[in-house]
Length: 73
Image (cartoon, rainbow, N blue to C red):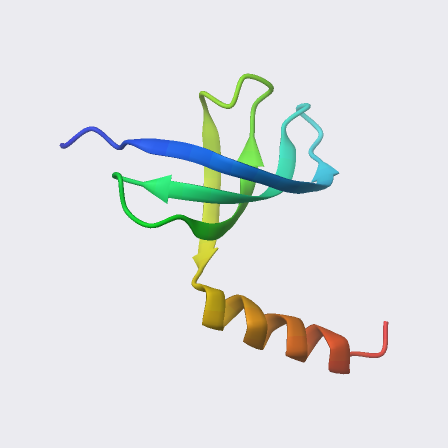
């Protein structure tokens, strides 16, 4: 299996903390030296281990923002 390369290019914010101390974060991440994307996932303190997550393009994050703005929470 090929090595996964990543670089957190910008930390945008923390969404919460899990029971094991990992933090759920929104970051800009470059995966395998590609253009950075919006990324939500859990990270350990050193950002050298990660949980499963989801990535969004700029268009997808704009659509998500619009959907969230429509919610009554």
